[in-house]
Length: 212
Image (tube, rainbow, N blue to C red; front, top):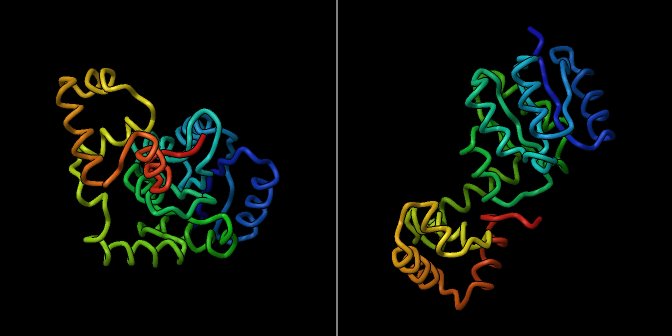
């Protein structure tokens, strides 16, 4: 059985190289390509590929957001995020959004071929360095400052780091301003952060938000 693959990357040179790699496998074929996240979702619905190999950083919609839409609209398709970022938080968000695999661009090649075959039969796949780091993080979870935060505190942390004012956060989360301020103070206390710039730096360092 031939594994039908959709490639999504906004760099033509990378797309051409990946297409040659995948079409060079006896059991794989590239059936569609896209150069932005929105187009990737549309082509996923139209072409009905078995596997999507998608760059994380793309115009209009990033890979994680596109993976979530693909899961909702074309659940049978497996998604592999291809990224230069090895930050564990990026990996976790992608998997939570619906990605089935995460491959580092630096390790692309045989690693990607293995990933495509693995996710096609229902398994998850991570590049080896990522799997090792995730395991280390699990073993050290008690030392992770983020483990001290509740789900709501993490939500407020992300929105604060993205630059949303307290009033807007309160409106979006259907909370009072005072409640959001309490979450903010509690979060900064738990993370031992002195001010908002320190919070933003923490969020960037941990991959909670991405540098534009």
